[in-house]
Image (cartoon, rainbow, N blue to C red; front, side, top):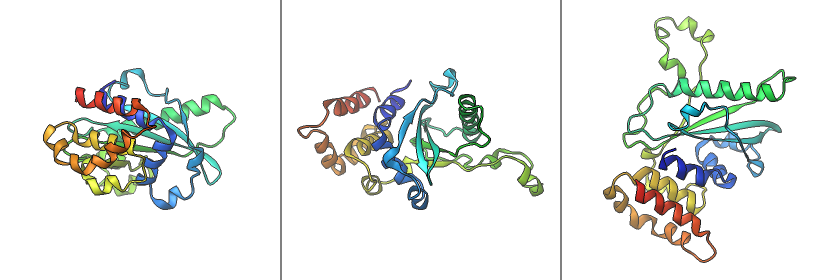
Length: 225
């Protein structure tokens, strides 16, 4: 697992940090239907082992309108976005559903799974956001759209989020700083250009009573970036 993945999992496997990220990404009307106080990390073991060195993955269970649904995070950090990410996500979601059905063979319905891609490649996300964009011939034969599976990805494209917007997210200092470092730590110039903006948040991480492992994990990431 790469250092990007390690940092993301270290920070956002904590449900309250993941809840803040969910609030920042999902539409408010959907968030209002969730009970994020009951957000729970669950194993994402349905992803094939050979894919784990490409993407970090975190899965959470959360009640939505009283029914159990799932949030699935994928971290994409390649310099060039993955052109087939919509297809890969469809595969992940299908495997997730298959695992749920294996655990409860009496089910007649499938739970909601909301996949979220957190992308911090320096070029920003420029590839397809919907599965239909990958299917050849649909533009010429729109009548077939109704019978071809489709979904649109939720992409948190960090390079498009400026410092003010990132600082305004409903997150603790640790996840905010982690997202900033994921966005900027590839180049020393970018990191130092915004360092003064992040001084307060960094100071909070050094305050008495904070877990020293938090700042240690960030420093390890910086030293290996």
